[in-house]
Length: 223
Image 1 (cartoon, rainbow, N blue to C red):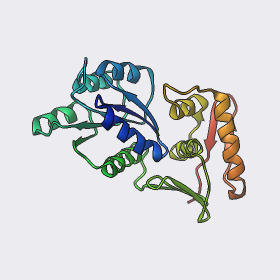
Image 2: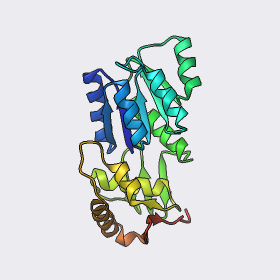
Image 3: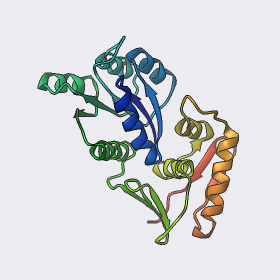
């Protein structure tokens, strides 16, 4: 999943980013409110982790502008403000969850997974598709009970396809999903990842179909 961390505390932001990257998420960071607002206006994310006490534009205003653009991206507020008034204000502006500092990274990751499942209408942290089983919590893919060795980005691609099972995922959506500001992205790289996945899933009978001129599709399975 592609996650934006909006946090001006460098040490905390890096700790959260490192934990999420280890779980094969693609992470982008913004250290101020105006930087976050620009990034959210120009890019798509799966989850936003938003501090409130930000320089140049506070978190409430970032959230207000985000929802005014009719964006439905899930937002978790991460803040030291723990008053009921701040919680109510954040939730009323459109936040999906509210976590006060200090917090355990494991709890934050669990809340991120819960929001992703809710967004894609999955009740469980596992996605089963024929012989494939994707454990989103453990960041593992297995086929007929046997582990499938994937790179972090291969795992991210198959996760996106399985979360949107039965729907076409465009190359641009995969590019947006995989890369942060610092990466060089291209549709050719997407083709390489899909090619590798097809080889690794060849014996599973699961087919990643190419929809010409549109993108890729994993058809709905009979689970």
